[in-house]
Length: 393
Image (cartoon, rainbow, N blue to C red; front, side):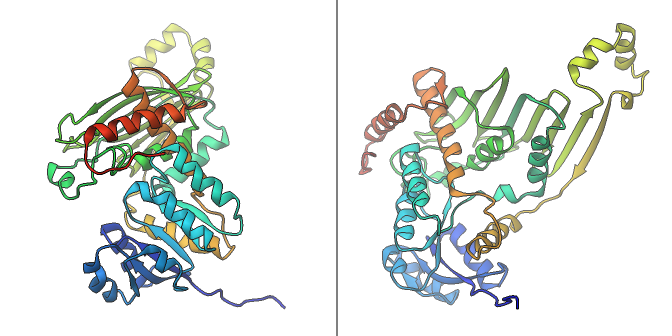
């Protein structure tokens, strides 16, 4: 006889009851996440107790006390970035599953510590909250590239400047936009989703050369504009541009391959061009007369390529629910994680390498990333900005 017993729902502990933590609590309170319920809430701010009780959840001001309470089976961290790894390790040590918000760490050394620790506990589920991976648009693009139908990568560019943040945003909390409190600017706060998707879809780059502007249009010490050029190897390159001072904003991803091209606008619509033969084969086969006819619009382009545009619409909100649902299903042994915690190292390393390149004016290896040098340069900036921030090790 088959066992049809429904597993007990995963009791989630939320560490940090801010905008993000509050959103997850509402999803759970409204029963929007199959297989998961709200177990408890933790925040160091005692004034959040009333809000937590409004969600019907036990409240703690010490996350260790919550972990030891027996009220949670898993945790999600919605706290300043430097705290993610230590909280993840503390949960795993108590046989509690861990879902860390992005980034999984501020620098690769601390990110590897939690990733390596999780590897010693394979019975526990360890994930990173890359909700953009649930977007059907990006899942379909990844599947297409993985299939090999478009051939080898030639070039990719992502302009993602829809992260406009006014000065008041940075003035909300003392830790925001500081090296000591946040560990960076747009690369560690707003853009980690795109850094993850870019590498998830196109592959991990081998090196990067970057130019960053620090406090360019905002009264902050960290980067508010980034221009990065990456090398994927075998001649393939990519550019990544992001900032927080463009109120109009652009979100455009292009991926050029040997046998086609993908263009994504606004993370909502995608135009895919598939060539009948590789571009190099067409270059050899077509006469100059045919080329002239193509440019004049006298030949039917469908003889050489097909183009299709698909509008996926907006899936905001559902992405976060899907990450939580998938995590609960992974805990129950029903699904594989869409974003395993170990994948979090790639975005952290690329962000670190972009910083290091901008600081030193050098091309920086990603394959053989110099962690000690990065950490030394980071600590110099933590010291220089003053405040009570500790050095990192």
